[in-house]
Length: 171
Image (cartoon, rainbow, N blue to C red; front, side, top):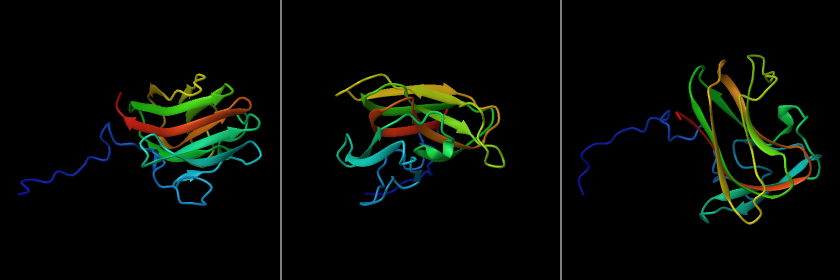
C-alpha cells in the first residue's frame, strides 16, 4: 500500500460533533457521568451507563424522580460547547423516552461572566417512544455566540435513554 496524500480533518466541518464525547463512548466504570459531561443534581435525576446501539459505545439512561426544568443550568446533565455568532448549527439527539413527558435537550448560551441566558437558543422536546429509538433534529443560529451548555431537563418524573447528542455547524 502506498500513501499518496494525507488531508487533515477540518474540526469545524458540518459532520464534526461539537459536543465533546457526545456519543458517550468514553465513560469509565464507576464514573458518575461520561467524560466531558457534568452530572445532574442527584435530588432530581440519576444516570446509569448502558450498552449503546452499536455495542461499542455507551448510552446514558437518565431517570428523573421529579422535574428539574426550573432548576439553574448548572444542575442539569450537560456538556459545554463554544458557539460562533451568526452561524447556523444543527442540534440532534438519538433517544428513547421510556416513560414520562416534557423531556428536552436544549442549548443555553452563557454570558462572559458564566451567567446563563434567560432562554435556550434551541430546544428539542422528545415524544414518548417506549421500545423505539428516535432521532430528533433542530437547526438554530445563535446571535451572541461564545460558551454554551447542551443540557437535558424534564418537566416531571421521566425515564429516557440517550444514545447520542450532536451539535454541528451547518444545516
